[in-house]
Length: 274
Image 1 (cartoon, rainbow, N blue to C red):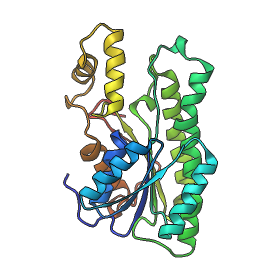
Image 2: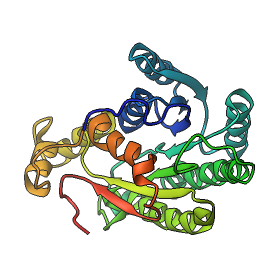
Image 3: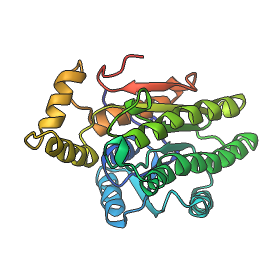
């Protein structure tokens, strides 16, 4: 699907974890379709590189460095964006972390580290932005239809357990529950909330996963992803961040997706079909 010109013209979008990987692909896609994109990212170098890519493609990328696990920093981000642009129309809760490891190797510290970003950070970012979105709708401030949209990044790991990522799977299951609760809460105002469940994606994170899993199972570099794609993905390829994941986010945040809310949509080449 090619970018739709001006689909999100006049909208302000926050994309967390947008410095690389899926978040960067989503940010570039939304910017190509007219949105001003806030690159909400912990790593400053990655954030500025992503913003430069957005700008070089004719869009507008604005860096906001943030630790998404810190609720005070989340509120500061919301206040800063609203102070500068007057409104927030799209939130993409993409920031996430993962160390793959056997279930019996997960320590309390590892569990807390992952949940702080993947579950706690996502929830409070949604909460604080949603409060602002509600206020905008009540005051008649809207850049289009739907009047505001939230997309949370879950995963196919949120559909079933993962023996080498039990803590990650638990967090991504929680994302789907949070999505449904928020969708119910915001529906009376026309604000949509959905989740996306990617599978294997061409990103640096998946390169790290492949390195660890290939070594763990005695495969050559790239072997674990190749084996997983061939055995688990009917379409026989990994997803592309902007073209596949970003396009789905853009659709859900557009007028064409305004009647879709509370859903967890698999974007995984058939890896999950339910």
